[in-house]
Image (tube, rainbow, N blue to C red; front, side, top):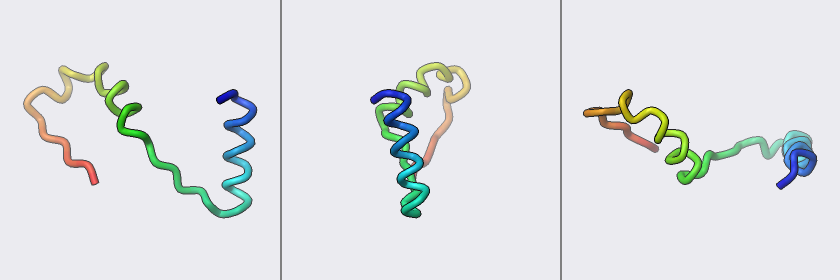
Length: 47
């Protein structure tokens, strides 16, 4: 997806009031890899 099409989708969602976006689990997993030491021995509850 290009930056232009992403922006277009966001503008379309805003105008139609469909502005709820959810982060994909795969994206969360990729990001959390950078914080292993912060989450060591912790429990994270996701809803």
